[in-house]
Length: 501
Image 1 (cartoon, one colour):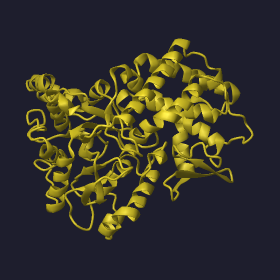
Image 2 (cartoon, helix red, strand yellow):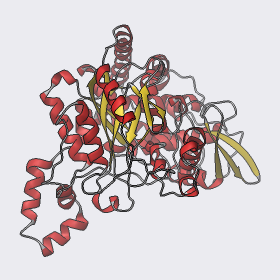
Image 3 (tube, helix red, strand yellow):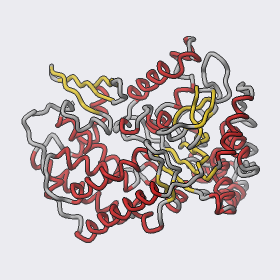
Image 4 (cartoon, one colour):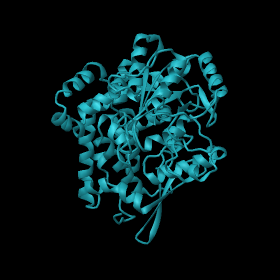
């Protein structure tokens, strides 16, 4: 990593940047105030219902998924929590649900069909969303996996394959957002429905019969969702060549919800954590992959040009579905970690606040570019090129650790000295977190978010917290957009982030 001068003042580029117009500033502050009012109304008038949802995980560049881009499917419950990884119960106060999933080989001492973990463990690898990682690497992912195994999985995971093999797929249920972006499509359930599902699964045999063609992860999700709402999800054999895919289950679920508006369909999006892990890819159906992927399209043009129109027509007429577009239409407010209300659909007026418009994202990109240009004038070591390399250098020079509370730290050794950096939302601005490393981490994180395509980018409401944190790390109290927005977000949008990121 590049050398640092401990006495170097942090540049004040954020405070001096004025490319965001006064109109944009007033609009964002007004949105914050309105959103806080929505939160208060939600607490005063909670709904009696809970939620069940289809979890749609983006595709990893691994194994068969590298070719198929099918991703992974799981089930979310807001009122059902794990009594153990293989037993269900109703959630208690302060719990915000769980995710149930099955795999080819979960890898435990017994061949279980499914495991269930708390929502926070699934998304972030830690119990408290305040300790969610701000930086992702395989070192951190492995650290969180081992912590989960020691705390929750050890009675089921005593053999060497379970403890040490990277092929044991229970690991994918810990900190999923470190390796990919996640969508969750949810609708209402009643307590009676939740209790019935708990009884059915606790009383049934949890024995793995995974088959990639007839009993895969999407088939499992379909089985669980249809236990609540018969025929709510179904396969698309035409576009997926006789199999059930995660995208088909999700698409049919949204169609069911559209026909039943009383179910109140809402969509959550959890972006992949910026870091050194390769970015996940959008999920595709079978014909969509053939139609949109160059590695398949070119061979089709050469060897099967007569079949290509059929593939294209099938996809265009019956297979199109964009999870990001569905999220933009129905963005939802996540559950609070303290009171655990159901997931709420945000109002029409607030949709653009949560998602952000193209104009707003371009304005922040322009502002950030001005900030970095100003930094370059102060110190040549802080160029845009150093931002692109920072994550890699941090991963190479640092050793991550996690404390008893679940907060992540990076112990960095360079040039004969060592320092410490907070990697969680709860400790990135802590006193014992190196201020220069903190500033570079936040700059690199914001840079990565602003460069990301929609499907792997934070929502605007989440990004505003990153922006506010960067403002605090700059050490300049000037009343800019970020510093004015920060108190409102600290008061109200901590609620949002507790359940969203």
